[in-house]
Length: 279
Ligand SMILES: Cc1cc2nc3c(=O)[nH]c(=O)nc-3n(C[C@H](O)[C@H](O)[C@H](O)COP(=O)(O)OP(=O)(O)OC[C@H]3O[C@@H](n4cnc5c(N)ncnc54)[C@H](O)[C@@H]3O)c2cc1C
Image (cartoon, rainbow, N blue to C red; front, side, top):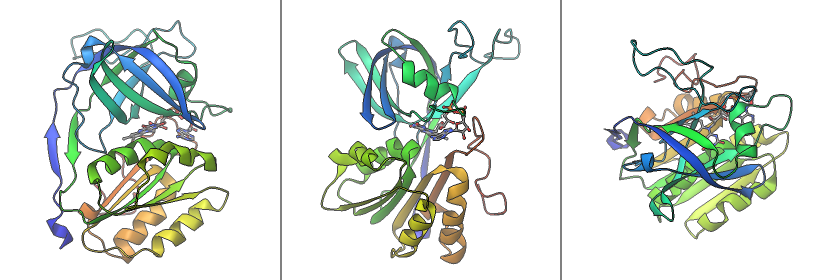
């Protein structure tokens, strides 16, 4: 029974890490991998696919200084705007050539009038640039008895999808991915395998096509469904899973990672405010 799906929360020491960019490389259309290094990464832990770090960026209109929140009530307030966004730790290497390394994969959506400071920073990041990273505060470790998984994501959640795939090993996976550019499929090329069935959907009607694809899948009691990406587009999918199919919340791991037209979405706010059962 799916109520036997048990998630385990593990808390970590919350550290604010002063790091610098080691390299920046394009890994797929509109996707940039930024590797940051620094002694402060010692002891970095990220155990679960949904782990995220808070990344602090310089104000694009400022002199490059990165402001972080005051550590306590007595400490002076920061002298400039604190700009922070959530990112998935794609990979951590404790023993890189220049010490511990952390890879963060950024969607470069900031190429029009709706630029965001994080994507704009990632597009220009160069070796030596400073970056401040805090967290993860904790890891929510998925159940160990998952028998199959459905991973549904847009570009912003592909790093989390790789973390799920690493965790799931040979467990059968159906991936439903909506992307602006079909060539983004190259991001998961090295993750393909016999137990994995990836579908890439682009175009104006992609939201409808993803819903149809989801409705065509058999979802058993030990199927884990992970959905993450643009918040509004996830609401009908989550409603289908929770209300129409009646799946319990331990089986449906849904997260709005960003919201069209809204800067710095608070991802702790309910994805679907009309749902009294929201966490
Ligand atoms: C737990 C978690 C993990 C995440 N992991 C990653 C990750 O690994 N990689 C990653 O790229 N993102 C990730 N995100 C999403 C990322 O935090 C947001 O996309 C963030 O808003 C980007 O900040 P920004 O400064 O570039 O844009 P903002 O200033 O927040 O927004 C400016 C404008 O850009 C739009 N916008 C924001 N993000 C996107 C997008 N992805 N595509 C198109 N338009 C967008 C907004 O709607 C707004 O109109 C994650 C979010 C969460 C909650």
